[in-house]
Length: 336
Image (cartoon, rainbow, N blue to C red; front, side, top):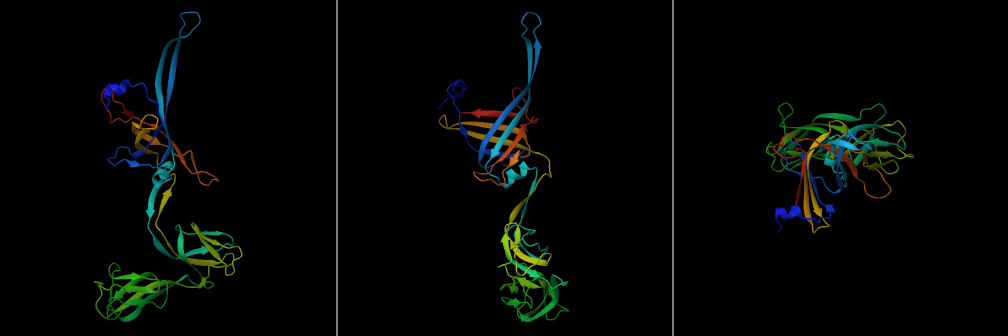
């Protein structure tokens, strides 16, 4: 194993680096997390040069020179367009939207147009066309289901209920509201009482209030296609016309939402773990103490061939928390 002095004096050192890149928010105690596959990572230096002309002899020349680094730049090309990389690259914020159901989402039909749903990837879609001038939903209050108890299935008079409120008791005047968690689940036809529901007595009665969608169900065949961003109405739809008012019930899976250009440039701390393929896998680790990351110079959206990537650049900034003689406030390189 080489000593540190032998490493410092080594002359042979061709370089062809690969390796992971890690980042965390500057000033935090968070763990460094991988940013994914990085196709290229580069650091550049810009300097201001002032020269004083030699006026003492014929022929000129430079009498003195002053050089100062004006900027240390960073550039990355990310292969993984994950949520963290994407949101940082557009000065955005990311939030998670958990799976759920939507009832009676209102839309106006345009033949040959896409109806953009409020949530991504709608599934189990049901489109209804309410009667002219009629409401999209109706409300039922205290629908009675006597002599029901634990483990029973209760079928409502109307399907696809929403905003369900369940009360239990011998009559509507004395019934008390039943919490859903642990006691019942809502189905497309009503509710299912848990076999061990703690809030339910044996052979009790139920009083349910809910909303249900109205109108004629529009079949998908010949009328619409469900797409990732919404519902495409076919140009020759047989049961729909331009300007028809419709309501849509659907389910959606969990997804992430990024709001672009709503925050300032993020400041990060980087570790670039270079593994030298040209020199027996020797390591060169670059630690950047503080860097700003700007918006992406371009974002690949659609392309005929190849893979999408995300190009971003930034600037290495001074980290005032670093101190001591000969200690860099910007970055350091560790080589074995």
